[in-house]
Image (cartoon, rainbow, N blue to C red):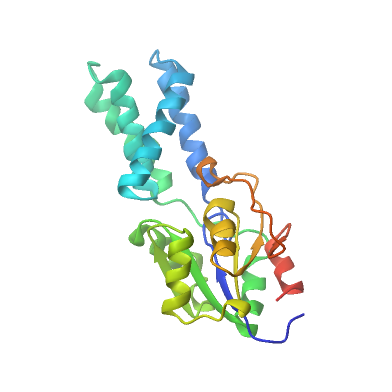
Length: 230
């Protein structure tokens, strides 16, 4: 164990608590519903992906962006349907759980985070809609374990470099913990810090990416394993 205090940047969604499973559940329900309306499910699924990628670039991440993407997809197939207005309302009702889903902490998170926060300087680093992410953090009951909370629009190399410079974080004593190769691990390593990768079986497709090859990455099976390294 390293006795020297570390700065530990920690991702939120699908690292501390379940998140993407709720989006997947709504997407499955939506696709079944569109199939019942006579739409080709494969075409609908491809259209959701295209529209969501576009909307993420324009509006950022979060539940509202996802719901709007479902509505926009619906209009691509059913804009002239006789019941379009009521069916849009159905989408809102269907997608309500991604707006206010319960916070289910992943195994060992609360206990391990409590220990880590006493040993090191812990900073929550998450991306998305500030209001939506703040609600999750407050509901989780974990806010008190963090010295600071950073909610950013995107987690890329530039955002990591900006955070490191603004908070004057020592690179040799700073690391990132997360489940996303694209947003947590690869950009952190590119910015010059270590990273702990904790894969999640249901990581969102848009967050998947090949891990960069680096001896600065340690792969763990669960959050509690951090205590062996930090």
